[in-house]
Length: 317
Length: 249
Image: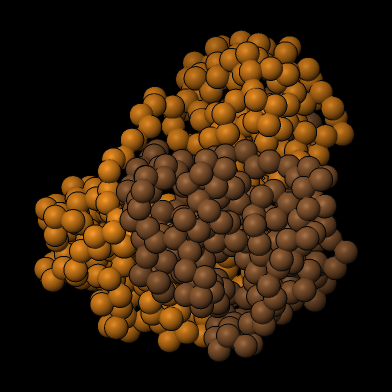
């Protein structure tokens, strides 16, 4: 039986992680169908039909699907699920909110946040914030799987021409009402998806000194992170926290400044491609995961770092 | 209004976990255990709502082995009125826990059920959503702000793009984000008082729910270790390495 992918979109465009989830879905089974639940969502359905890995698109429209709620979306997928062996979507806040509601109705034990497809019923997933990897085999007849988007490459977005089939909507769930969405607009990339993250820890000594981190981040087009110690000390708000109880990040470059490297912080960043640590304590645990360690006083090192960056002709963005 | 808060006992977030040598799981013997951090936020929020006069009773519940009762006792020490401990051993998948919670909810008839958004051990992020599915109640996940209005809640949710606000009618499920509040510490007198608060003990096996795991945990491994890096002598060398060797800037 085929795999059903739940697309995330804004009725016009596909959200980028849909492409990563499509890649994972195609690794489970070559026959991938995708469902778009929306309002005037024809454009999103068309874009989905152009992904070469998608063999068929199902489009469901109703006014109450304009803004996503799990309560309205789940019944559509539950109805479709009888024709599929797997239901798949990305493990971001969209999929995390939605998939368990589907799985419970199907009486299926969901496999969350997989990072590798080992077989049609066997998956690799991180547990304990990535401090261990579990190989999980699902014995349920239908499998509900969410996919860690950063662990799968996005699929090709053009060249396909899957048929689009319009299907009936489900009943509206009236006890939940969408009120508003405030998208945080910033020139700075989002912490969870940024290519470069510059983080400060307790070594910054004050909230004022975090300006140094901001300067480096501005120069590199990076997101700003922080350790729990820096957040607890009030240097910066907790939406910047990287770690087991904050965000897990996997950028190409992670620069840890004045961060000692507590277990709970390492859990949130040690999968980064390149890690730089700047710390005056040469014994700090952060150095054990750093590709490049600089044992130095950060208040001397950061201005020098800025100076060296300014000397470069180009900086990748 | 009555609020039921579900709490889970997990390995303390400051502990470096160890994988068992036979790859069958994580070592939990002689390891410091605590309440799952966002469950502390859930308890705190329920107690705050009660203190504001909008709730009359806060009931803390856990499902798990004998020692899991510590988390209920801790919830009582920070302001929950009474506790429920559903005893069950072995691996409990979120689907099983949500089925147990459903039975308790049908008996207790709370207006709200709160819990943390995710447990920091299995990182599943499922139980609240599954419970709301089984009850066909509204769900507000990743809550960072809750406003109680008569028979409704206005909840601000943390989503990837920023914040989303929804209005849900009670009865409803809310899963709590770390940003919702600052959990208080239990004072010594309150810890003493909590010892006298009642905890009802039930056996999962008496509830008529099949809690057999559906997922087979084939093995648990350490993640691949990072190769040891190098120390650079100065900032100039660092920038040169990043530019020419790692090619990331």
